[in-house]
Image (cartoon, rainbow, N blue to C red; front, side, top):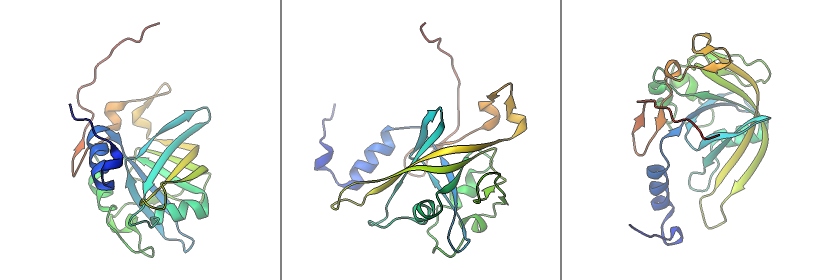
Length: 202
């Protein structure tokens, strides 16, 4: 077995180890609104649950050559964002939103996604997602030092759930019906695949 000190590696080498090891990763498609009213959309796979009471999620966004991405700036300015679960039906369109566009162009428009109004925040979501989560910014943390590209870490409080009715029954979400996809390394994604059950000890 290899034994490697991450301090001896480049950022890119650590990145490759992380995205190849921590799999599968759920994908958050995040919409934000710029101060000029441009609807930004981008997918991120450094994403997970933080808490159910209150309901909160976390999202980490790597900087590009030390520069904050449009999503980061928009979240910091507006304190609002919408997280969508990426599924088999929308993954190809959402993949298009990973393109690097200038701040005055909308990735949502580029991918022909359909904006839909939120209930409790001003940032629209997109209609093509079976689940979307309206979020208010709870905490933002800058990670990394002056010698590294850095990362912006957000914790968002979910203030409204939108769930497609045909995947919802008796308080539960049908995982097969959701058909969420996950991120692996490189250009690879994964579907849910085989589901098995193991009873938890009392």
